[in-house]
Image (tube, rainbow, N blue to C red):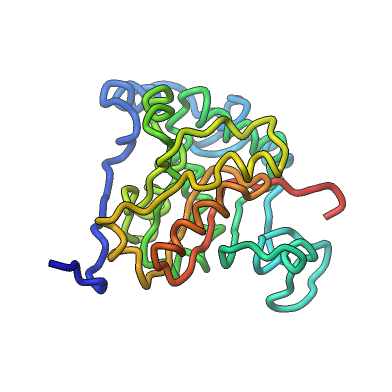
Length: 264
């Protein structure tokens, strides 16, 4: 029997820190209570958990209005409502809007790499909360939220998906359905680090697919895609095309940090 396309997607509410092992999560909670609060980036002592020290806060380059309505690129001055950057006009992306917390500079890079490569899974709680504030407009219009998936072998090696950890926090904070299984990475790809823009596009082309069981859930709905970093946009474009092929009415993207070229 065909699934009703108007059925609300299943809501998944992972328990706090479900992306780490129970033992590691418990140990982290005990450490939070026993040790002085530290800066999320440099580990200097701070007044409360989940904050940055004055030095790191001063170096975190937040992306706030005015910015490009499509790509979230910051403007030097206000160009008016719904203004678009030259990049968005010259090469419109397949997704509708991108929002980011900060530029991918020193402090943002430290946080992203800590979560992604150094097993600092506790960072997802705070980074996801910042993302929920920065992406208020795109979150409000989303029917459900999903992360950029890892291939099963990469997930086995890394043990957790940092994008899923962030997406779970964003979804919970906004009381939106979290549907991580609505998208799969069906082909293993090389790491994007070090590849040119064209190489990144070729690397992820055709790598994502909406499983047949989830196509009725995706069809006709607005999807919010969550990732940690937006660099050239190759991954976001590839995922968006897979979702649109499955019938999504539109796709928005929310990331913690995005690369901003000098001079923008």
